[in-house]
Amino acid sequence: MSSPSGSSAPSLAQSTASRFAKIALGHIAREYPNKLDHVMASDADVRTPRDLHPIFFGSFDWHSCVHGYWLLATLLRARPEMAEAETIIALFDDAFTDEKVAAEVAYLARPESRGFERPYGWAWSLMLQAELMRHKDRPWAVRHAPLARAFVERFEAFLPLADYPVRAGVHTNTAFALVLASEYADMTGNVVFRQLLTTRAMLWYGQDAACQAWEPSGDDFLSPALIEAEAMRRLLPRETFEIWFVRFLPDLARKQPVTLFTPARVSDRTDGKIAHLDGLNLSRAWCWRTLAGALPELDPAKPLVINAAMSHLSAAVPHVSGDYMGEHWLATFAMLALTNG
Image (cartoon, rainbow, N blue to C red; front, side, top):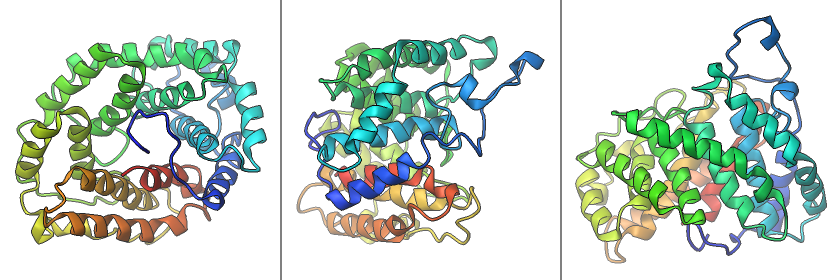
């Protein structure tokens, strides 16, 4: 992408776009198997995924369905001529209606839904809205906007209460949420919301130095170290970020910490948690590529960082399909890795 919130289409080979579209179309309306994030208060709350979530009922879980829609919207913008385009348009026209969006919003109003998808699904909803806004000739963003606004309000209520970050390499990671939420803030020109994200990033990460990078853990799909750096790159002025980044990872030119340069091994792609490690390789590739762009041209770490991005890509891209435990989400992270940086 030309910039995080730019309107130009990402560069992507048509064959890759078509492959990713076929993968996403194969799971986005597949209701089962399904892992619900659903707190029940009574027998009346025993309901099917489609009944609870008339838009985001597929893709094994709610958040994967949300970013499956983001993937398809981004692919449609990148390659509007691909054979799958009309199917995507019809799917979106059916999904993004006032009635269905209202039902998704109503689910959030339940007292039991306070922690629903916090913060990963919240951030992906905003990322989706930012992408839908780029499709200016379609009504999708206008219709989806009430759900995005509901999640902005949740961020606004939650972030001032969150004294500490979550550094795990999974859905609860707070740096990843800041990255995606900043895309929405920039796309909408919401300066106040962006400042909230920046203030929280500085509170959480501003004093971090000499990162040890004790990773990966066994079910990481995010690098706690690199996604933190990417959040700071997104939110801080360039000069401020450069000072912070040198302090945070001072030994990059010596390929330290070495674990960040080494793709994770995935021993069993039928195990949903172990399969997360393919996502770790893809999200590392994405972060390495964007961080490489922030390094000075003559920085001796720059070629090492670029090579690390490529090795992580090579390790994971061949495995975005094959088993449903990875297939329902990995193409999204491959898209992030291939089209950013």
